[in-house]
Length: 117
Image (cartoon, rainbow, N blue to C red; front, side, top):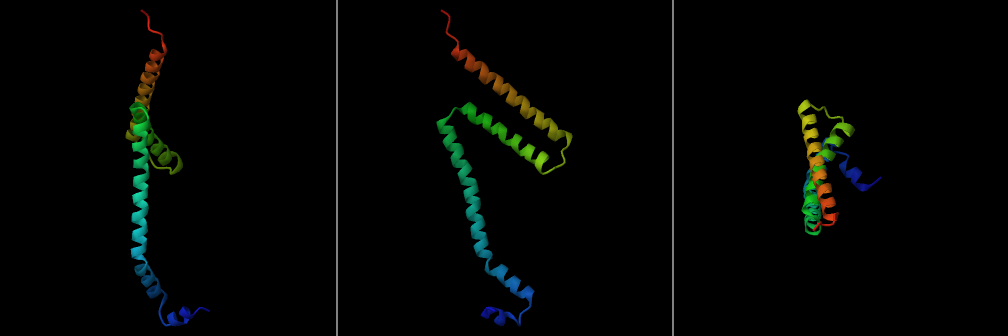
């Protein structure tokens, strides 16, 4: 049996647990801050890279996909209750994606057509 168990035998379990929580609080906060900085900085850096190296329309299309993915995760995986307003917003986003896609495809085909003189 480790030596510290004998030293702690006179203390109750709640006191030991409280001490361990307080003693490790600074380290836990530091780790949470470090991971939250990474969780914020990495997507921001990737977005910045994407904006610099791709078309703005592509980036805006991808920004429409984020709410759709969050909605699908919430409703399908987490079984969140959804009101009619949520479904209406979901449909508005899909309509916006359809309008954008139609415009982008049309512009692409217009560029491919040979210009008549």
